[in-house]
Image (cartoon, rainbow, N blue to C red; front, side, top):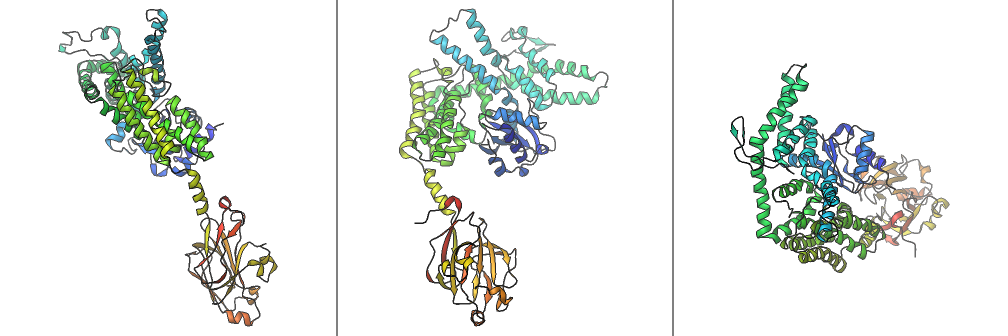
Length: 618
């Protein structure tokens, strides 16, 4: 079972602690941090935390991809810090601002992400209800249908009121004053004047536009509200500012929306909605191909939810969402690609990852586990998924397929598309999005990690070069029982023919005996080696030896370590047979491919094989 508390603690520590976090929100799969100093975040530590898929930096945010369990991890962070909760705030004045695009994406993410699940859930209910009505499973004249329709449509209908709250939290404005403004925009008698002629406010003529499902007006006015409140609080006497401030703000803000902001935003929304409509009416396959191909690329950078306002704008202007159909193709294509990996791979670990990633992608539309954990690292599956998204998206849009509600594209949400557009092309488009990447992965394949793991394991072998000129002999021939029986470590021995010892690999000198008769080395991978010149030569007290290195010194393969007078040592009655051994067999338990006979320093001597790469002796 996932330990969400442990994941939360690891992530919070990895981003530099609570003091380094300006704000935190979450979306469907990610924790979205705005950090005061991103250089303090330890990406490697975060990625190694159990429950974390990967990290990404985009849109002015430091994103930690969790997957389906992100709400639980978010809640646990709220328990161990003052972060989390429903609040989302704008960066502090002294926080890094980023470019305009990053700031916009950060704002949109903070304002919309708290609403996504309610928006998606009620949208899915509306999709099921629409499908039931299409197939005659429910009578649309009954009270039951009316109640269910109200349940499914109310949230998107009154979206400005929800946005008023999240925008107020982001811009640090009064939430309930923002709610009062949004309520005025949605007030029944005001809504009844939409499109009426001859409307004026204190003699100023204006045209009333609809604010149902609108996005732009409420965000703009709440931003202005936040500045007005700060100004009024600074200027008004303390005795009256708490009730006079909201009165003034509402009195100014609401007419400002009706007379200026609303009509202008309606024009802008019309242009955007009209542009989307023109594209999908005149070159639908192109719009679908672009959306289907790029959506998962946006997912990689965490920018995909920045397109949510476009969905809502399209819905507001036309009551339909054409943009969302090709996203179904993009999502299902990546799910199909990881399903292909599940079928083809021979790697048990990869298969165990691919199984839940496939189900998550197909059923819930959550593709981050598939993308980050499998498809993107393997490269080809991700590319094949993009191909499926392009083809499927083009076919769906060519068929004029659309949704009447906002849903998170997934297998379960397909009813949102039923009855909307050409159903034959809907079936063909979805089938293409699934079949194409699946077959490409299964038939063409990818570089299976089974082979990569073998190469990686072999690459952990430590290549040891000869530290001496001489003749290699078996360790068992050393005239010292402790060396000969391998008690001190495995390796070989060399009978020198010259008086110099060189580093057998890049290492740190961990033992430089003052007597010069032995040197201990440690490789960066952890292998430890002892080169012991002669047997019992410690008794010479350093005579005939000249040590060239000191403990703690970094040396490169081939660097001179010790010089010695071999003839003098032998005349003194000592055997010069030199053991070259690995002294930590717990990590490197086997020596293999040992050289034999004459050898020069710098030539391959043997391989020391690590635990995870050990190969049984033949």
